[in-house]
Image (cartoon, one colour):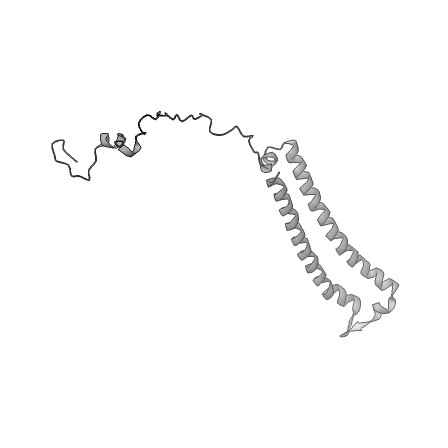
Amino acid sequence: MNEPDAPRSDDDSRPDELSKPPAASKRDEPPSGARQINRVLITSPRTRAAKRPRHPGTREIDEQTGLGEVYMRSLIRSQLRLALSVCVVVAGVIGGLPLLFLLAPDLGRLRLFGVPLPWLMLAVLIYPLFVACAWWYVRQAERVEQDFAELVDHR
């Protein structure tokens, strides 16, 4: 703490010295006979124009507005279409196997490694189909969700 009577060093500055503008030099003065122009800075209290508030699509969904319902209906419809297409493919293959063996009875009597072909197909070969359909479904579902997120965010 500085006492009022304590001497100050040259690097200590007083608050009143900081608030004063520096003294004008000869270089800053206008030439003789020239008119001095006072410049005035004009500012507005409104620094930015009024912007329309941006409501993200997630807000529309959260508040359950009409637009939010349209968004959700489109997402659910896309997911349902994808799920039904996978179910149709799997059911078509599994349901088509008995039809195949009915139309080609020689395939039903064929044996591989001592096991009848229909049993081998239903017990072993059908699972890679399930895995492939599940992999395709997951990739397509992620794509649908990503498209939905982009639609909602970039409206």
